[in-house]
Image (cartoon, rainbow, N blue to C red; front, side, top):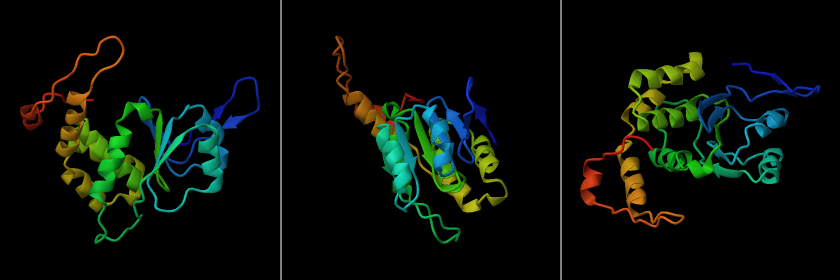
Length: 200
């Protein structure tokens, strides 16, 4: 996954952060960006960064996001390896709400190495997108490599995306619309029980 881009007509070399990849259009993932990666990140025209570690964001990184009007969303998930330490479901749910809101795109998700915490968030996004579990696990393992964690995959497998869908439907059905078409979408309780929408 070592990608290096050379800028045409110049000597600048753009280096992406470790484990960098595009999840899909407007969503990227990586390990912790260093100042040497900022030139590459500029090419993504980011609107948001989802940072999944509890430690304060370094001053250089803060300056980078501030100077480019990039919104920083921090969800402090401990990077523990002990099986007894569980990933906080509520925190992942809140991060997912930020992640699937297209107003925050393009968005970069990162933790320290772009493997476990980032892999869990992306895995839960894939479940929300109705990916089959084998494909979700394959993607997780591709980034985690030899450091794959059974507890992470178990977390992804048992993560309930129905609650997130219901939350989104309530927002969608109460939305007033915009522009010249102010048609109101009606919110109905039965639509929550039997969701018709499968993707956002």
